Image 1 (cartoon, rainbow, N blue to C red):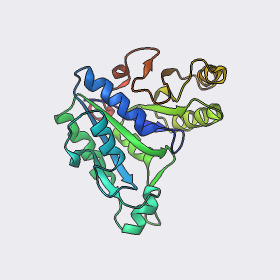
Image 2 (cartoon, one colour):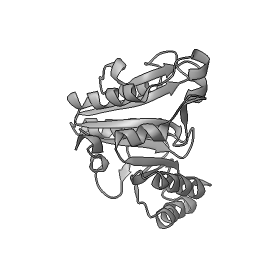
Image 3 (cartoon, helix red, strand yellow):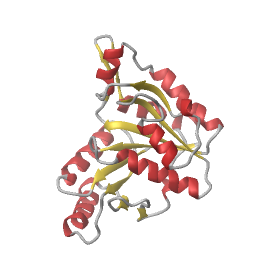
Image 4 (spheres, helix red, strand yellow):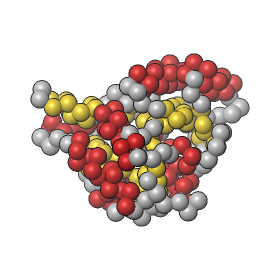
Length: 228
């Protein structure tokens, strides 16, 4: 199994939509692609969650029970939603569910929630961040960012934080990108120069296809370190 983790510069920048487009792109190339999200909040069912959307949009046909590990109904950060329900995520269980996908898929796309500084559990005696989950998987990340105003700061800070944690950043994807917009073009250049990470793809607003700028998307997936 080769995998990659998709994070974002914040909430509502289109991370799930970009994940769905990546999954569909690989699926249409007849690659065995699966999807996994450790904790999802703000949905009454798996079908109505972000994970359900990716499964449907990409026509993966994946068993709903393998798409995620923890589903919370309240539209809150996972740590608050978990506190309300008194049902807390367990890292070992999450890691086991993620690795189990290797039996069925050659590629696995895992998606985070919000930005990388997202608490999944934050109790006095137990703390779990999405960055902890990513590090336990031993896989690189792709950063989804909006193409518009403010993205230089948000993206460079996100990449800097990931690097500080020792997490490999394999690239940036700019969402809602307009190649005729001078600011969007400059944002792309500045992100690459300031972060020393390539923008590997751009997705125009509402498009169903990522323009791959460097190489095919599947080449950014890597084998989890712990299975090497």
